[in-house]
Length: 241
Image (cartoon, rainbow, N blue to C red):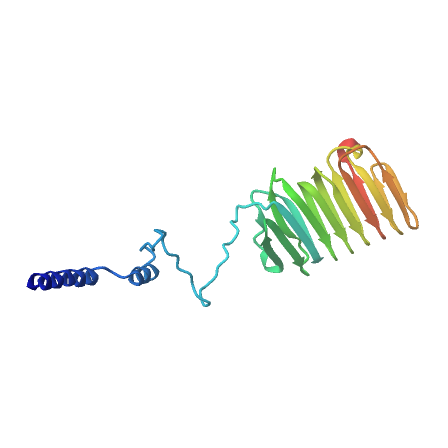
């Protein structure tokens, strides 16, 4: 009987010693949350997330980057898009513009009373997926650009585009003057034309009058749609002259 009691006491002592030396699961979890270098039960490093007061920062677009899409608008004043060594505004233009980046698109809005134009330089050989140009008042000229698709809107003022359009184009014109000088030949595009009191010229063909429409099918996969309320829209192909 005495031997049984001695054996029972020894087993109880060994159990107390093992339990004291083993860390609890909650202790491991607490260590892994307080120190990201400590692995949790799954062997993955614990992540640390800032609270509501944590600072959020959006990385700025690199100066050397060229966007896939270009959207420019002029409320008042003049804007010129010209070829240059890099993509960006000229040094003295930034203070009178609103500039933003949105899903790979560069958005530029100009509203100024200065007599000199705001200048945006574009490196030679740049190819945009899409270009959108809007004039609500003032003057906008884009020189020697290349784009997949082109969209222009002239509510009042002057809008000139020179360059290449590899896809289709949409031209909305209320009043003033819109001029497209495109690479290639007139037969490279189909045309859907609508006019109220305005004048539309495509190559050597001219259309005007009170509320009319005209379609030109050249069997092309590309189409230029023009809607002209007043004023004039002209599409010319200097290489074809």
